[in-house]
Image (cartoon, rainbow, N blue to C red; front, side, top):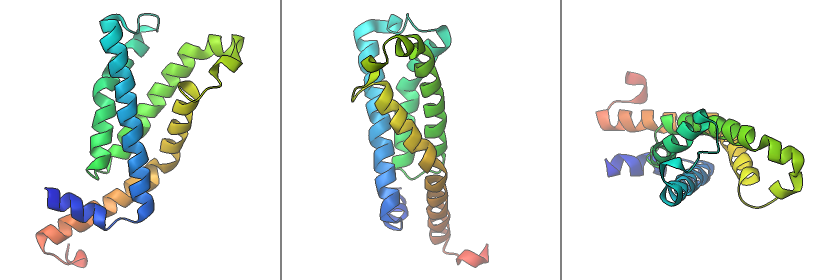
Length: 154
């Protein structure tokens, strides 16, 4: 399995490596934030949020690392899962912070929280399709090489 992962990543252009690295770092950081929240606040860590957001934030303890692992292993499902995570996470966070943002917008101008999460989400949206295409192409190449067939023999 490690050989297949090495072959898959070795054939990728540098931009794919960098984009994947940002995905992995972002989703690992997101999982860490949710883990700290739950460790410090328990299951009621998000009690001030709507119930749907509470469920989502707890689910991100599993989904964020899953997206990071899928991308790190070069799986085409990783960018799709990442985009889905970011859509739901950004909707929940903007919805939950909207009143505060409207009352005190300058409180949200910082290098953590909603602005950084939004920039990461925009990055994921902009790169999910190209990254998935690149990973699909390398997955096909790996299967062909593993089967010992020429690309046109299928």
